Image (tube, rainbow, N blue to C red):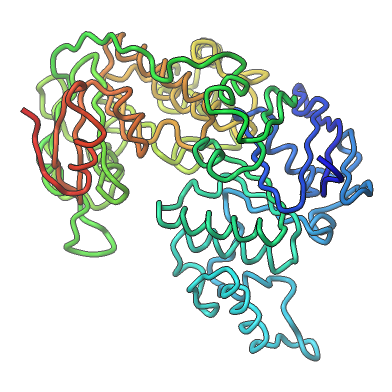
Length: 509
C-alpha cells in the first residue's frame, strides 16, 4: 500500500527462553480495518504491546514508523500522545466513577485547578452522541452492562483523538445486539478515516469487518492478504500450519452404563429472592458419552453445573447419584471426593492461580494422591505434572513456568490437566474453548473425544452451537432454567435446538 499510516518493520522481541516475535512486519493504512489473527502464543499481544509502549525501546528490535517518521515510545503515555489507543479484552474502567469521569480520566477539563464538571459532562455527551450511544454520562460505570462498558472504552479512545485504535477480542462478552452496535460504530469510524487493528478468534467477524488479514504463527508473519481474496479454511490453514478439513473429530464413543445422574436441581438467584435460575432440572450422563447442554445466555447452564458441584450459594435442592448411589455435595471438595471434575468458564478467576507454576496448578486438586502422610512428595508431584504436560502437549519451557505467562490455550490445558489428575468419573466442561484460538480448539476437541472413548462421562456446556452439536452424543436444551428439549446426535439439528433454546418446548421421540 502507498504511504501507510503505520509500519512495523522486522520487529523482534524475546523473553527468557522464548522468542515471542521473530522479524514480524505489519502495516496499516488510514481508514482501514486490518485484522491480526493467529493462535494464542503466535505473538499478537506482544506486537500490540510494543505499539502501545508497554514494551519500550530498546526492549525490542526493529522499527515502528508512524506517518513516515521512526518512533520510539518510552511509555504508554508516549504512544497515546502519538494517537494510538488500545482497547484490551479486560477493560480498564474504574467502576465507581461515572462514564464521563472514565472517558476523561487524568485529562479532566479544569478551571483554576478545579474540575469543570459542566464541561466534563458536556464533552462526554458530545462524544457519546457522535457514536450514537444512548448512555448517560453521569451514570456510574458499574451500572452498565459489559457491552455498554466496551463502548465507553471506545469513546474514551476517541476522546484522545486516536488515529489508530486497536481492539483486542472486543466482542468476547457482548450479546448479538451489542455486537451489531459495535460493528456499526467501527464502520462509521472507518468512514471517518480512523485506522483500526482488529484482533479476534472469531473469523466470521474478521471476514465481515476487515479490509486485510495478517496471519502470525510462532512469532513470524506468515501472510497478509486482502480479505476479499481469501477464505476461512485458507486463513485457518495458515494459522495452524496445516490444512483444516475437519473441525470436529469423528466420534466413536461406546456409550456404557449411567455413571452420574441428578434430579430436581433448583437454584435461586442469591441477590433476588424468589427468582429461580434453574428450576427442577435433571439429567443422566453415561460412561463414554459427551452430553451437551445448550441454551442461550441466561438459560441457567453454568448455574446448573456450579450448583451440582457445590459452588453456587443459591442451590435450593438437588438429588445427586454416582454409580447409582446417592451422594451429598455441600462444597466443591465433596464433589472432587466423589469423582467429579469441573473446568469452569472463567479459567483466570476460578480455574488457575496465575502467579503459581504450571505444576502447582495441575496438582492442586489431587494433592492427597501425590502427598506423603504429612508432606507433599515433590518427586511424585513433579513426575505426575511432567506426564500430564506431555500428554496434553502444553507448550512451556517447563512445568515450573508461571501459569499466568502462558497463552490462553495452554492455560486451558493446565486446567484440564488439573482435573484429569484427579481421575474423575464425570467431567464438567463449561465453555472449554472460550477465548482460545482455532488450533488450540482443535486440540481440545480431540482431547474431549479421546476422553469419551476412554470411558469418561463428559457434560459439556458451550455458547457455540456448532461446538455442542459437533462434540455431543446427546443434547439437552435449557430455556429460562428449565429443560425444553432432549435430542440424540442425529436428531440435534441447529433449527431444532435453537427452537427449544428460545422457549418452544419439545422432547424428541
